[in-house]
Length: 311
Image (tube, rainbow, N blue to C red; front, side, top):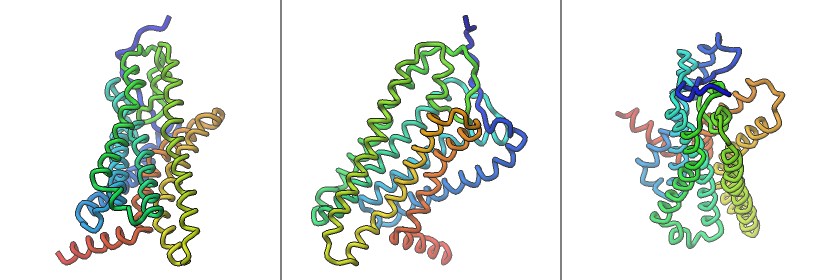
């Protein structure tokens, strides 16, 4: 029988075998974290400050930037703590809450990308009714629904983590807490915690991706009947930024899933690296994509810097 060591804190892990290089590894990590905070923080500021960006498309973009900021702020303290000062201890409560926010925000991000696809669908399929369909109150309801879905859906498996006894090794495989990592350390029946996430992923990530895919098929059908080539190009160009963000998000999700499911013989450092890519690459890329591909955002950035340079 395993000794009951439930009170012992969990131990976070950086890059196994590369502990001596953690200080060097922390440099690019810190640079990426700062870039994510600056990029998404700037997007939020521009959308709040520029009245020309007070439209449904940019409200959803603000939700995306806010979600990316929260994911970053959730993982940054423990990751940098491990890499900088080898601070590995984390209490059970803090660990479960971190896992709750990480997984909830991932579902929120998927929901926001779906809401943005809906925005593009309405804008291209029924442009004359766009303002009457996507009113400010409806945008708020959609946003609230996305947030509620993300945060409520993770309550059952995370609550169970608080009740499980932990008597196996308390060493986690990342520098942040993940549900699938923690539940393996429990000395209890974890069948529900195995099955529930699979169903949840199917009803959120997979279903969202499917709806986004079909919405773009319908958008493409609509665009193809537009007579003017210039108008077709303009309509499709409005979707490029969103498609890029969708690809960045879902390719990293698929990559992480494949590594976990089929990469059992891959070095552990590959699993760890893919996890960091999943949590850092989309928040890092999204502001860059929208800054490069969206003229209104570019104009706002130019105005922001010109005002500060005059000041």
